[in-house]
Length: 167
Image (cartoon, rainbow, N blue to C red; front, side):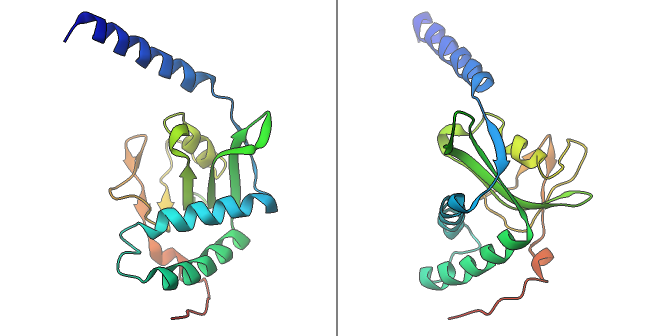
């Protein structure tokens, strides 16, 4: 490989690092017009998870929509957005603040990942690097780590959500 390639790659890496530092982000409470973004992102992403494999799509979408509705009612939902245009959403988080954050779901659009947005959103639930995070939904194909600690997956924490399941 030529040194030109390495110089180019190094310059691109530096530019990406500078962009990460300069991305303006505002974290705000979700409002009703944000809910289609929250529901569609959550349902679409979670429908591809190991949890949903083997469940017919119609069954998954109708039943999981009910779960999301109950969680949104009882939880905090925050949106990461562009401060100049709050309609430009980067991602969201749904969870509850306890002695440790209870994370129901988080989503950051692909092009805005690796900017620290997830940590900013998690901070709204009271997260600090010394706290454990508990997840009610497992939304990745492998364990998730934050600040070197694995997040704990515990779907049974949802046991108090009462919904009628349809087939």
